[in-house]
Length: 304
Image 1 (tube, rainbow, N blue to C red):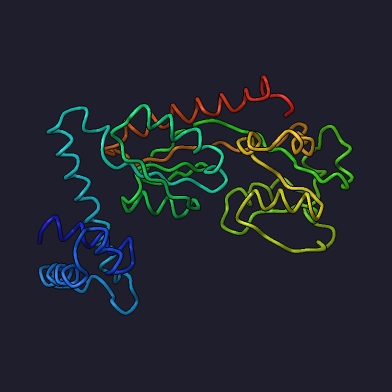
Image 2: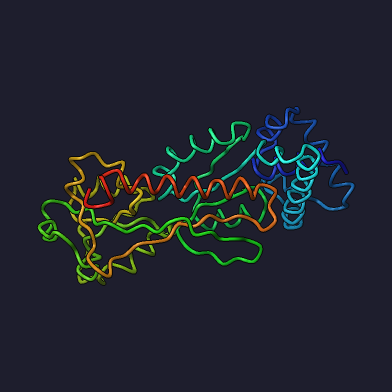
């Protein structure tokens, strides 16, 4: 068994294809297949189901352990290089879809300026995928919109943001300066598809349905919901980070929620004892700074 074979196994598990994994590790496909087979022979188990294109049950456990072994190897290298080793090399972030398009365009340049030797890669995933990625070691940090209490993970609160209603001009609530959460009819509200934590947060705000929607549609994208409000009618709820991308003409559709309002807290997740913990903490600082700047885009966090 060799470290290279462990790297090959992790690459194969992540790519799900011998062809793509071979390209990633700069081997030919036959050479990669030989190395995986040698690793299986050394361990005495079958690690990868060639027909299904995924690790076997025992292979999944071996892949998770291989990631931890490779991370410890990187820790040794960083210790040998000194403090600067922590701030270089790969740094993998998972971000939920209701944060990624709004936070990342401002956050990533700041992180790049602070750590120019860092190789940042970002995956847009739902919260369960981020938790799984952190547990398996394929992610170094995660940005989520719910508090997750998971053994082995640390959750740092970054900022709290309010939800705003985005209302079509033809809707009765459009004339209101503020909207009480209990006044929002679920049957008129466009929501994200199942699996999004923001969907559950919106459902907890809206008034229970009294009728059926003319068109039933669930999207995985907030921008799609905004377009549906504009073209079909009704309303949707948006997190505060999404407001700065709206042009001035569209901000006329926004209405704040009157007390008690509604909102969420954004958290940074990282593994306890992670080699990249200091980078993750710097990411937290930059995310907070970005949000503070975002709240000032209209001159003080008032009505857009």
